[in-house]
Each structure stands twice: as structure tokens, then as C-alpha cells.
Image (cartoon, rainbow, N blue to C red; front, side, top):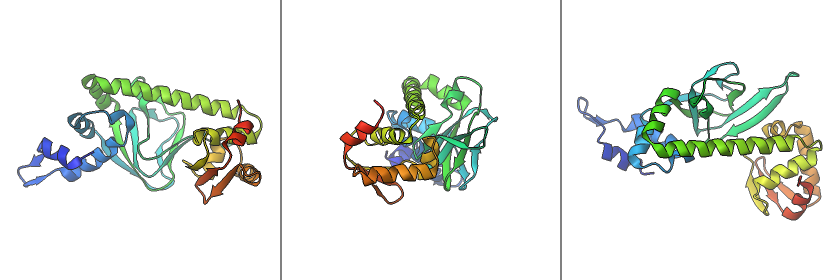
Length: 247
């Protein structure tokens, strides 16, 4: 996305002070351009979205929102990472999703009043863009392609939730992990980046970090995978990994 061209086309100039508002809108344009639901919009349409976004900042460990709060905002990760999690009755965390740059949360609040049922916490210094329910509703009415993109995003989110529920229903941790790695790797051999820390991955898969480490070592000992550093896994034998994964 050519931000300079968009800004130039808009001619957004402060005549009193003789300078453009590029710095006021460039970050919002950068943020919006990363989101799949906005990427098919024209330059002018993208600018319309950027003009109603508002930046927020969260330090590592800082709360973006908490359970029980009213949700009327779409949150888009521009830089950094945010994890969503539930707290079980015994105090254990169940990671639901990890949001990386371009990911967003809160779209359901655009259609109905919602109380957050999960926590959102920055795992590192994070910059987000937010769009209010009223502003995005107005954009949907103005930009019909956006409504279809949102419906597609909601469908993808539902599929991901169903996949996680299917994995969590498996009593044995090894096929649970194998199923996750098989999906992450696209059922092929090769190196993949883990989208979250191993601690969060363990919580996402409903196991302890110690159990996750043991199962990764087991897969590595059997020659099925290799772990590379903290955030990469190389799938050496996708067939054997598939044999372990749930059908």
C-alpha cells in the first residue's frame, strides 16, 4: 500500500501551519492495510477506514480488555502481540487465540451488545488501532464489500474455534499436539513458525508446559520433527505426523 500516494491524493493539508497531517494518519493507514478484511478496498476507501481509527498502546503484560467489560470496539494489532484467554475455575489459563500484526478481535460487538468473556493481554509492547462500533457500522453501510469481508472473517473464526474444540476433546496429549502441528504445517514437510510462545501453546492445547516439552521431545526422538530455537518446528515426516493426528 502506497501511503504517500494516498495522502497526496487526499491533499490533507493544514493551511494554517503549512504542513500535512501525514504523521497523524500514516500509522492508522499502516495498521488498516495489514487487515485482510480491508485489503480489497480502494485507496479512498482505505483512507475512510483509517480516518476513524484510534491508536492505543499496551506495555508487556498490560490489559487490552478484561472479562466483564462491555465490548463496543474492534481491536486491530499493528505491532506486537496480544493473547486472549479464559480463567478456569481452578485458576488455570485456557488460551483461546494469539493475535499477531494484522489480526483483530471484537467484530461480534458490531452486531450486538456483548460483555467480554475473556481477557486480552499484551505479550510484548504492543500498538493497536481501534474502531468504534458506531464508526464501523457507518463504514459497513457506506462500503458494501466490507460487510461481505466481515462475514467471511466471522466464518473463519468459527472454523478455528471448532478446530480447537476438536483438539481439546482428544484425551491424549500426543495426538492433540500432532493434529495442531499437522494443521499448522499444511499437512506437508517443512519449517513452520509457532504463532505463540510454547507456554501459550501449552495452554491453547490444554496441557502443561512440561507435558508439551515431553511430547515435542518424543516427536523429535522419533525423527518426525525437529525444534529450532524457541519458535520454530521443522516437520521431517508429515506422513508419520498424520498417522498420530486424529482423523
